[in-house]
Structures are given as C-alpha cells and as structure tokens.
Image: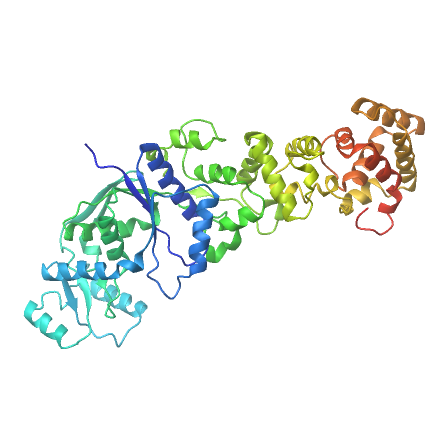
Length: 504
C-alpha cells in the first residue's frame, strides 16, 4: 500500500501573501483534498532579519480568507535548527560532507562567484575541487576543536548527472560538474535553506513537493542532500510561473499591491471567486469550464492538468479600471451575479454596508425592510464587479448623500429645459397611482411625447439625478427600488444637481 500523501506549503514570512504563493498553496490543498492526504503548513522563518510576526499573520489570514485550511501546523522552521545541525554533523561523521576552513576575509558573495567562474574557465570547464574536501578527518576535527571558523559543504560527486522526473516538466538533468559543493552550514552555525528544507521534509514525511519552477535548480541540490541522508526524495511537481504583462516575473518588489491577497480582499473580491481565478492561472480542468465550485475544483484537479507554459497576469498601472487581470474581475462579477447563493451575497453586502456606515437594522432578516433589501441586492448584483460596487457606485440606494458623476451631469443635465421637464415628471410621479413598472414607464414616455423630446432625454436625466451614475439597472426598476416618494422628491430637486453641488 502506498504511503499516504503528505504535502507542505512553506512560505517565508518576509511580506504579505503573494498571489503566486497563494496559488501554490491552493494547488497543494486541492491535491491533498482530492486524494485524502495531509496538508502541512510550515513557516520558514530562519531569516531572522526579514521575518516578521506581521507577515506571518498576513499569510495565515490570507490562507483563511480563500478557504485553505491545513491539517498540521503551523510549524516554525526556526524551532528545528538544532535538528538541522545534527543532520550536518551526521554527514560530516559519515564522510559525506566536510568542513571548509576557507577564511571569510575577503570577499563578498559576488566576488566569490566570480572567482569560482574564473577558476572553472581556467580548468576548461572542470569542477574546481575545494582544497579542504580531502582534508584528513583527524586534522579537520583538531582545527574545529581549536575554534577555527568553518563552513560545512556537501561532497557533490565529480562525475555523472543529477536527474529526476518532474510531474509537470518531465525529465530534468544537470551535469554534476555544474554543481558546486553545497554549503550546508555557514561559519556562524546557521543551516542553509536547502539543508533545512530537506531535513524538515524528511522528518515531516513529505511525499510530494509542489512549488514554482524557479525552484528546479534547488531541487537538484536537494536531491543530493536526500541521497546523502539515505532518504528517498519525494515526487516533485514544479508549477509554471506567473508573469506580468511585460513578461517579467510577478513580484512583490516590482509590482506592489496588485500581487497581494490583502488588496483583493480590500477591493471587494469574494474569496470564492478569487480562489477560482487563481486556480486557472496555469491549470486547466481539461474542459471549457471556468466558473467552478470548490467541490468541482477538488474533483477536477490533477497535477497532469498543470500547464507547462507560464501564466500571464494582465493589468495596467495607468488605468484603475484595469488595476488587476480582466479575467479576475470577470470571475468576481460572475460570482456576484450568478454563482453565489442568495444568502451568501446578502451577508457579504451587509458586511460592506456596515463598513461604510450604510447599514440599517431594518434590513435585517427580521426587520421591516428585509424584503426591500433582498430585492435591491438582487437588482444590483447583476452589474456588480466587486462587493464595494454595492456601497460606492450604488450609494444612492442606501443614502441621500450620493455623488453625481460629473460627465453624466454635464451630458444629461446641462440643459435648463431638461431640468424643468424632470421636475414636472417628479410631480406627476408624486400623484401616480399605482406607482408600478408599467405605469412609471407609460407616464414618462407619454410626457416625453407631450413635451416634444425623445424619451431618452428623460430616461438619462432621471438616471443621473436618481443614482448619480450614467449606467445601472433599468431606470424603471431603479424607480421601483427607490420608491415613489424618493423618486418624486429627487426628480423635483433636479435643478439642485447643477448648482455646483457634488451630491443631491
């Protein structure tokens, strides 16, 4: 019987949860949930200078927001440093690693790498052996006991090749001559990343490592460490990268808030939609389906469905309407308009209205205006792209102090005659019985004929006055939602909209 599947998501707490890291976490999660495996959360916090508690909280909150839970952890890598050092001691004792007493004076990282390259060229591409690699064990022990500083390196074979089969990209091969003896332990006693990761993965019985393809070079190095520790490497699946429109790798440093989960939460994305969106960044279910429930994502997910081609994340810093990928905004709109159950969206809108101080307890389930609240949300959800559309673009439904779009105002309300017509329309609505969709439309169209103007003049003018926006649901549906009193009052006050005011 095969070992139970165990995966890990192992972020470094050096900033907020990146969209690429969130996708990695999601793919790991979908994989284990489909196969009944175990998901481990490991916080790789050994970089003490850059790791922060705030970043850790941001990562945990981001995972929880998109519905990713874990079965074990969070474990903190810094708690296992002694275990990492003992693994290095074991390798030294077994002759698989050696102490490197090369003085540190000298040289920064760049100079070291340049020196290695120069020596390699001088040796016609042959691997340059470290002079301490073959140091007598007794002499090495003596120098260490005398307090001489040293790093510890893995003895990488001089000949042959490092090979593994990647679940996504197939056969991967690297000549051993291109791999320098790996530093496992720095001279200050700090274990290095590749060593710590391997030891933790062994101890945590990880069976599958699913991560970005930028780790392929690390994988070759880590497999060497697995072998040295007499451990079987896990199955590796490397994911395509996510690129910005300019084909640069999407990064926190270069692309800022657009790659942070916090941004999407704060700008009105619903977690179900965001999760669905990032699932399709580099993976396909094998069909044309795009909007999928969580249950469908789990059922359809497979490592074989991961694309080899890198994903492109399209957005524009210069256009706020395109602040993120259009596919993501479309997906969010699909969830808001159709995919989310009614009770779910009612709750989301309630939270949004509360945050903007627009909520009334009359809208609550047992309140006298709950039916109105429900029908109004249903009316508005068809055109919403984000949750904050309900409070920002549609503030006129919840409050009387709503903004007027200046372009709509200039286009639809600049003619004094139009203002007079709208005021009269408001007076006619005030006495209209019954005030219903059909009667409101017939009164408007009849009055337009009487006044000798196109009905569109009154429709567009009414929309601007009633909602402040040039677009929205059907104008007569808007009137029904606002009710006769507010509709009539706002239309009669149309002239106030043009009097240098920003809101009615």
